[in-house]
Image (cartoon, rainbow, N blue to C red; front, side, top):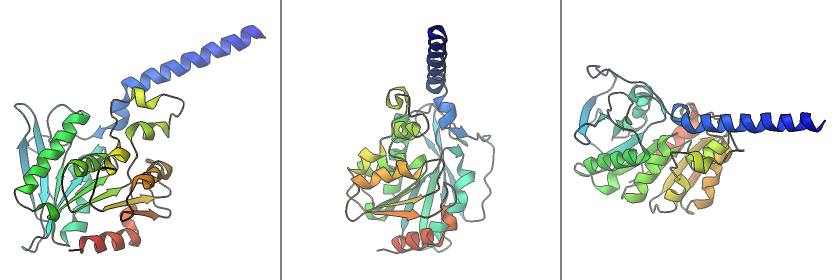
Length: 269
């Protein structure tokens, strides 16, 4: 009997170690799902846009699409950080939520996504977000810049808002941190130690002085609602956490409440 118990213990420990090693070495595979585009690929969208290539260093280039309102009068710019899947093509349809209010929308791809070339690390993504912000400052005042993040991009948006002055930060389906998000799936592992990406959104939110608006659905199975709900603890009294009942991870724009709230804040002076 003791031998059987000991044998099962060894099997469990072995499986635990194997899965832990796989999580560590394959985490980029689990976290990032890019679609690469050929350098000669031509974007096609049903709204005015301009493609911009931003040299990051001698070898790396950041690719960005700037969507523009039909009206020549511009209220400002929304710097939009998308999720971890595919590239700009996947989220371009959301630009209309902002352009119809007179805002430009700047969407850039992360390294390894779309036409953006170069090494991808947490630090580099942060640096590139700051570079985009500095470009926005050459055209718009600080109080005309809105920073928006969706899913994976919420942590990047929160970082940028914590180190830059802007009008407002808006987060759609955010996480408190990457290790905390991992723990929602593999709670028996020391996720903070094994995670190469930390992106502590909860920490960045505490340093942000401008208004923050958060959208999250109760039925989100990608970033569980309970993982985002923790951010309520660090919000200011003037911030807003909007719960969308029955909302999933990728369908919040199907709900009238999302548009009602987003439209009202975009119309604010």
